[in-house]
Amino acid sequence: MERRQLLKYTAYITGAAVGAPLMATLISGCKADTMTDAVDQLSFFSKDEFTLLKKLIDTIIPKTDSPSATDVGVHNIIDQMVGKVYTSEQQSSYRKGFETLSAHINGGADTLEFLKLLEQDQASSMKDAKEAYLNIKQQAVAYYLSTEEIGTNYLNYLPIPGNYESCISLEEAGGKAWAI
Image (cartoon, rainbow, N blue to C red; front, side, top):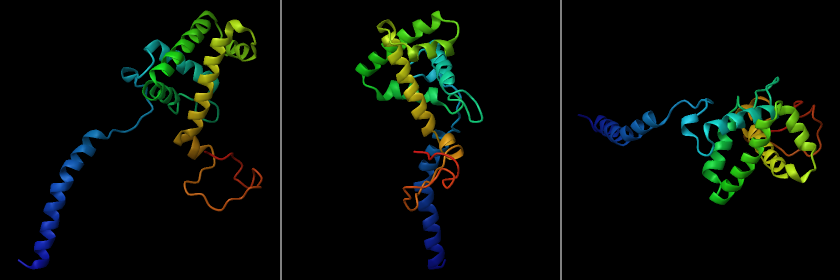
């Protein structure tokens, strides 16, 4: 056997020994990322609360010529963020606000009309519900604009930015606002 062949076989065997556990981990650990609801794996919301959250964020960002908030998985992001990132004190405060908002929405027939009235309402009786709604609205918009689908297909996106141009028109930027 030639020296060159011996080195080649040694490299194959070493690569296989190192790569086999890595490949097994990759094959078993990686699954296609879909935007389906992971209702059995909710981090914060109950199934009923999660259904209400989806209704709320789709009212805030409905499907038009671009996908709705639930189409890009904003409801899943909110559940994961609140359930896994928020402290227990923040979660408690969030739950209290969400329950207050939920109680007001479940009493009303038209969610969109109620949310419009809630945004304009200055009464202290609806203060907690309004605060919870504005918090959810802020999260929905921020997470929506941060998704890959929206950032790459509906906003201008440069993974590696070029030269900084401070004063250009929207038309010069391709007619769309820039992704974050």
